[in-house]
Length: 110
Image (tube, rainbow, N blue to C red; front, side, top):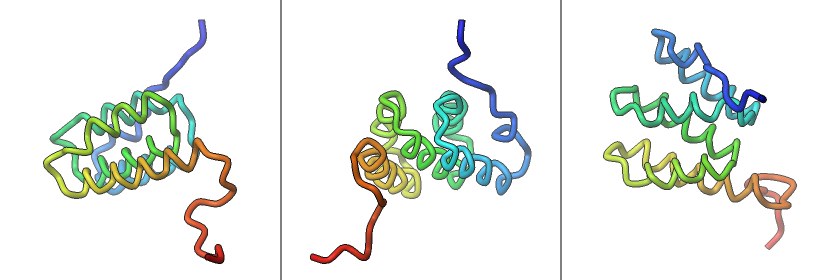
């Protein structure tokens, strides 16, 4: 039996700033093992919206089908930052599942 998720204790720390940074790093790592912990953060309406925002963007970077389901569910959240993060995360998901080399290439000639 293989482990398909891990409990990310850093997302349960008392500091909002620390939880936000942990979510950011998880997005950079793009490990599917962190998906369930990130989803718990996003689903927690009592969580600080900046932590939810970063968790949503991390899910967009990880880019699994499960991530997409959660992002789509929260695109109608009552917090502006959460909704806007879902829009960014959907764009990131599209990029992660494309053959593009660089995200948001500002050097591309029209």
